[in-house]
Length: 171
Image 1 (cartoon, rainbow, N blue to C red):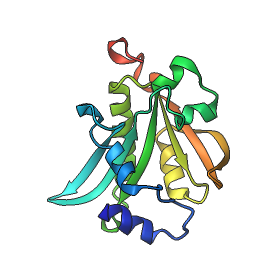
Image 2: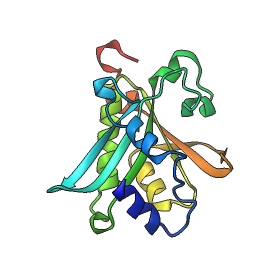
Image 3: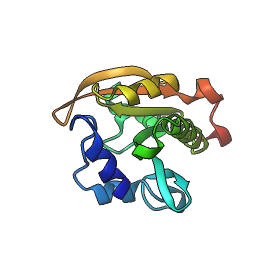
Image 4: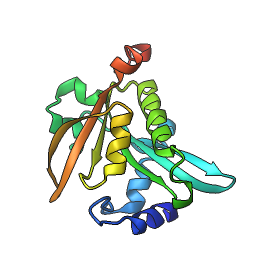
């Protein structure tokens, strides 16, 4: 939570990242899906005991009303194969070391290992650094519009084109 607070406070425009209604619930939901708790997983990058960066992966169910695949026109079983490239934050002293791109690649591999075939990221049009990193990692713009009163862009990547068919017949 401390890293989130520091990064969000340092952004040049408040639209670049809007806090979730319950920050604690959002973070908790993205920790522990592998243990059967929560709906996602988080990868952290540490410098000793200090958290330098993290990237969250959302693993929504096909019935989740917030599954971003719905905005891209996905339905049925395809929604069960969607992963969200959720929040990614890098502490100021660690920026410029390609940590966001490394965390993007790691989360895509994790999503694929969890049987997901598509990763979708939501980004503010004002957040050019994140948008450029998403493009660099192979995501393409699939939708632009308003979400919760804010202009947002959804960018997606088909993991089967990157890695092949999903492992273990999942997804």
